[in-house]
Image 1 (cartoon, rainbow, N blue to C red):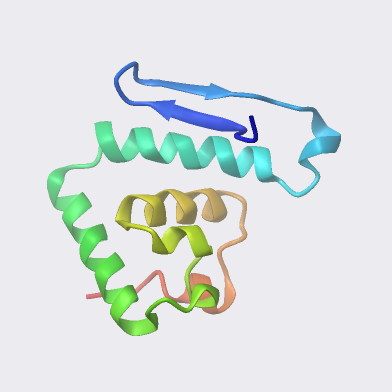
Image 2 (cartoon, one colour; image 1 turned 60 degrees about the vertical axis):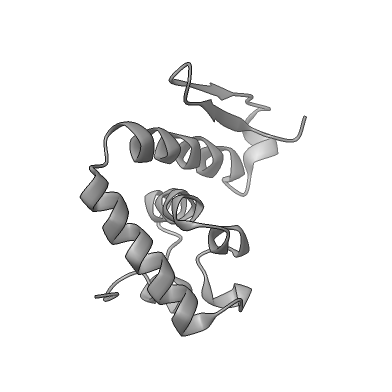
Length: 109
């Protein structure tokens, strides 16, 4: 009911529920759609090596900042490597990945 977009890998389909421009003043809808497209990209187009690299980055960030939610791109991105990737992609596409959170995306190796 509250989801704006979701991805079904078995169907390879992203579903969206748009509530109009006024309901998306904060860009949540766009972020949601791009986040779900990120799941599709993760599962269908990233190579195993690319996923392993991101998983390594996710572990590195977890060791560096732990559970401090303010240091992750979003609190939800601390859940696992795939959610971290999708959240970061959604923010990056909107130019909202900056400051202390965005600065931690690079340099994990």
